[in-house]
Length: 182
Image 1 (cartoon, one colour):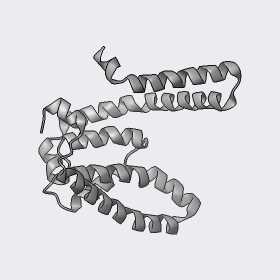
Image 2 (cartoon, rainbow, N blue to C red):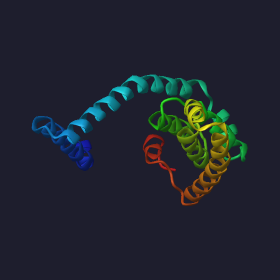
Image 3 (cartoon, helix red, strand yellow):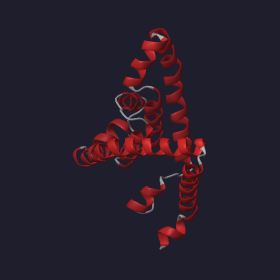
């Protein structure tokens, strides 16, 4: 019952959405029907991808040592850790709904927050399949210019935001619940 009490707003919004979509289907309101159809399509795509992602994250959690992540992506790694994060993000498949669990696993294993933010930004802008698609339509020159502008900005803003959060003692709430207070 505690879960229901804590998440009343989220449950209310979900119930409201379902009521709206159901009423739209019954009443013939096309935008509501389309929203419901898109939601089901997106949910189906996520249910196909996420089980494999969670299995891979579980294997990552068991096979990769915390010391390895801390060495390459932690506080002592320096600027090269951002390069590693961007290279890892470039290989990501499935978009941000796959990148968020991976970013969380990296943070739990000791990657500093700025590097995790760089990974998330990199997963949004420089995945290999997306880059190939972009280059085939807009040309390689456009893609190279976009990378030359966006990647340094990703590293800079991620480093600044990560340092800002860490100075204020920010921790992911789930980390505090799972591993005790800092």
